[in-house]
Image (cartoon, rainbow, N blue to C red; front, side):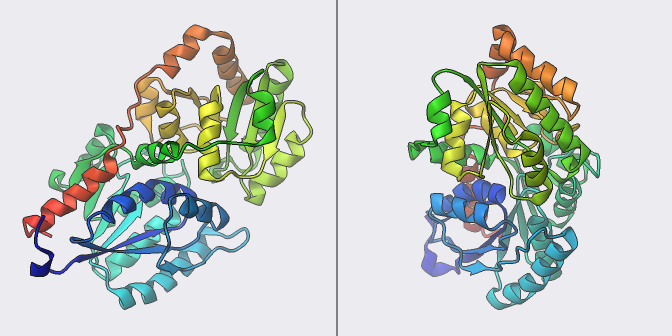
Length: 382
């Protein structure tokens, strides 16, 4: 290890605001905290999501140094962007980080990268290079991620496909490292805690039924697409007496109101509050099939050998489709029902997806990221 008395420690600022960002950055933060001879670690949360973010922080025992607390009820992209930009301007000028870490494709990640750029602070982007090449799908995440690429100095691509996308867009290969996805690191850390899920629904259904776990929350699904998803879930529940659908409902009123309007009170459909990360990891492990529009779950579920049906028209994770761990089914009710029926009735189809190789990594992505910067420091190139 280099002699810390011979050089200044690098001040690294992690900025995140949502539950997925917190999950995927938690193992990276933990690895950086093992190298305090090299780094001074600072953590800032915007609280773009408040309650769900706090649950993850508690699980991984992460205490923010700064909390911008920008969340407002039914907040718009305009309001979120303005509040984060204004508050980060003051914070960054105050603490003067040497390096800013952002993750993924949220509004917090984009505005944080933009803020760092304005002050000429180097930006490291975790989970770089994912693309659908449709600016409105997912919205606004696709454009957020593309813009972060143009602002970032260090790009940590989870897969070869993501790496190739970055190179195609003109990013120097020397600035890219293929790491695997840190969400696998986080999932393995969580499962090491040996979580036990005590919700009465799971106790009641696990031994006698096949559990279908559902998550749906994306902006592009608001309105008719989400109503279609609800119609499909209702049909699945009515047609399969040995199935229980468990749906932790996102608090956004554009999701919560129609979910309870169309699904509340239907036999074998259980609408429950959002779950903390450990509980949700246990739910994934207990499930038979997962229906989701989430990006992270497309990566996590294959590590648990769970087939994923993606409730979207496009995905920025084509690796999952190519590997056979996930299938795009969109939001047309008949297509969702058809794909679900196949997995429920065909063991061959089910095992083909369940046993497919997980393309998203081996749980060592965070170590690769930290080692990358340690080597730069040792070579005096940072």
